[in-house]
Length: 295
Image 1: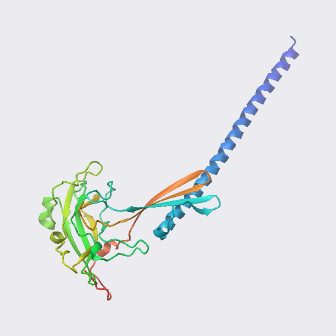
Image 2 (image 1 turned 90 degrees about the vertical axis):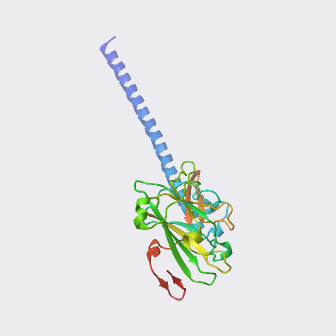
């Protein structure tokens, strides 16, 4: 075989290798471009679905009574669907059902003792609908043993003044000598299965702990109980009386909104609780106009 034939064969092999490499690179780039376009489209659809889900949450918060079950058109090819569940404590069970993060010092854990109007959000100040039975308060230990302050806002009869009264409990016997807070009760119902295994329990009786008679006709009735950690943060829960009548009222709404765009769905969950007074009001002395609000 001549050197010219060998050279021609080598050139042909090199050309074939270059063509194969070029074809491979071309197919790779084509596949990558297709994937990039698909990912970009999915990201765009996901953002649109998330925006639709947000719109559903906003609509439910604006007026929970207008929520409809079927998907609601939001824009061409875009819908949201909202579901609303009452946040209602069950007698004899923990509320919240699962232990939440510790409440920090300066923050407040609120328990409404009267129901709300779902359309307006206003309190229904009806003595016959107020929770007046015993209530167990559970709280956890921490690096610093916490205590709790309990403030109850109440109304002194159907046409009476708004008032507030407070008490406190401290499981640390050494501090009790100086802060004059009450000792906690024996740990019974608050010692649930993990994660609802609390360290301390307080059994609240309105007459004994707050000195308020709720049984007489036309007597005072409670509105809201506000629990604040002292000395250290603590996770808090309550257990309403299983035989109470009326029962502990609804505390807010669990809102779930799912937005859909194309084949993409995104879901947002929000726990909407009723509006509460600012925490600093618990430490204030105030009189408000002619409304008879005093402390």
